[in-house]
Image (cartoon, rainbow, N blue to C red):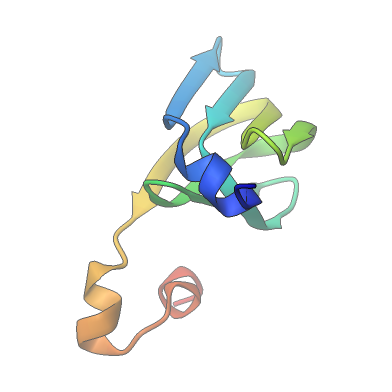
Length: 97
């Protein structure tokens, strides 16, 4: 039997944004942190930061790695953690500079 981590790693990663109000993300390993203005997600392609206003978690499917977020989406970006190993900085240190 495959572990949850192995199952999620077999899925593709995609982001679908509809009218800047609804965001569907696949290939999510875990939600690290979230509030009404920012989500930090660990995906199979790296850490993803979603920023916006009045953000709410609509759906979390941990088995298939799908997350649905609603609210005003202002932007999202990936955090490159390749430098982490060289510089000794954690992802969180770069987030809260």
